Amino acid sequence: MVNINSPTKDVSAPVLTAVSRLQHLRLPKPPTILIFCPQAAVLHHAVKRWRGRRVPGFFGEVYLLGKTNNRVAVAGQFGVGAPVIGVLVEEFAAWGVEKLLLLGIAGGLQPSLGCGDLVLVETAVRDEGTSHHYLPPAPTVAASPALVDWVETAVHPTHLPLKKGATWTTDAPYRETAAAVAHYQQQGVQTVEMETAALFAVAQHCQVQAAALLAVSDLLAGGVWQPASDPKLPERYLAQALDAVMEKFSDDRRTER
Image 1 (cartoon, one colour):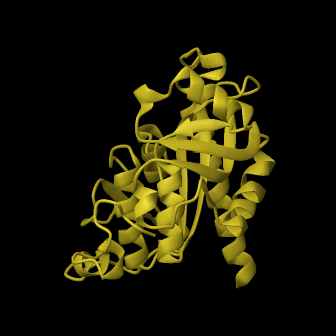
Image 2 (image 1 turned 180 degrees about the horizontal axis):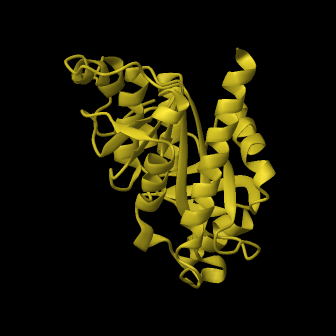
């Protein structure tokens, strides 16, 4: 991988690392899985229902969930975009987290998608900057297949509207042009958002698993933007999906004993 602005950038080690930033913090034992909850309502739901306890030291808010014996954590209130996700993935991996799941919102690109529909992402188009600092050039980056299958198994019993497919990750929502929307729509890409490619790329770099479950919050199919018919529906569906993931995790833990 060659950086055109600094051709020798990737032949030496970084000066600042997540490990060095965290080493002076007195962090508790890491959870097995951490769930990114960018939507405040979903984060608050998780903290209230699953008895969250704040873990200081990270950007935004991180909570260990007591009802999972602190084996699951949630993170939110960190803003939007690929760079912040990249930083957090590095830090959570340095903490010892093994699996990362994003429960976020996205714009729908396909006419068949409706407000609140869930898309379990298999691949992400790398139209942002962060992933290119971690992986060699390539059009897309993949989720972790085993974690994708696990999330699908967890959410399936809820009968929520669930599809699998690709997402387009971009840094510039106001540059989602009609031509670009048409291009990705024709390629069968389901959604557009700002974080998933970075999540997958940095997770691969850090050798941890990553997956993303996105709820459609607005529509861009046909090159015309349409706001959500029910703005609260995506959050409700994501909260239900989060509960299903928690139940699946708890069931798996009981089976292992």
